[in-house]
Image (tube, rainbow, N blue to C red):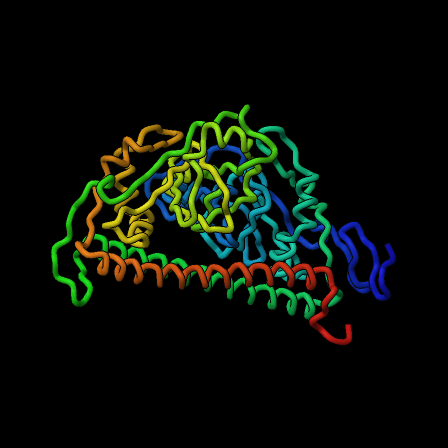
Length: 418
């Protein structure tokens, strides 16, 4: 493949002729990892024992199960971390990176630290380590069979492409950091909107907050009085074929709809017509995951998804004539439904629920379809806001990936006359 004028081929791909590829060791004052022993823990302290699983989205995340150490233990075990430090997960989960911001931490062996020198803009290294070519390099360097490990030697030899001036490094890092800030602000807004929705559901489904113009008391009903439901059949592996009618399971339920690319399981039309025709899903069916870690996840079936048939891990729902469709949809997404399921559910590591449990569910409903519809519409409007923001977030993340591809390979230059 011919390289265009002004560019050259390197081990990490095509970059401008005036760029260079350095090993990370050449750009660092020190690279090391955390302690390989168990520290002395403390029951109450401001000092924390941090491993690779604490490094998330550029930050050190202290969770409820993060161990604490005493100040004396911290002073014994601390590493030479400073304002030049980036942290990297190197055991189990590989490649998560975070800024060190003078937190009081002792590092465990599943985290490495990289102290960059004055040749390198730290924010730029943060972005480079998240690129596809670094991810591929790390994958090729991993050791271990069950639990993967990235060694310090491999980290030191990591190839890093750099523009010739610090000002160009800073310009690239700033552009990508600004994109990250925009993405973070959208994620926070989505989180806030979801909290608002939960609060609205709490008030509206409890009947504590009534809509203007409605005063009649709500009615508690058993779920089967208001809703029809059907669990999928127990299909076996030997029944699956390469074509026919598509079979869905819990993995197909994604972001409120069906992602049919998740699986490629079918049963033959002959088998379907003979045994399973009454399990065929209809347009606008509400389907809910009934087993596994994603139990109670909800999705709406659209006409473009059909034809489909369920498997045993999915239950479909239809409202009866005295229940508004969208009120049912919002109820199934609410904690009022999930909390009742949690009290009835069976199975520890692999929770499951089915029609037996659903027959014990209670649902509080306004006495009129009109009030049910008005309540559902409020929640649907919030859902639409969230969905719009999520689409915008996905778009911005895609744009950020494109920026990384162009800026970190020098295809687009942000500094003139270099």
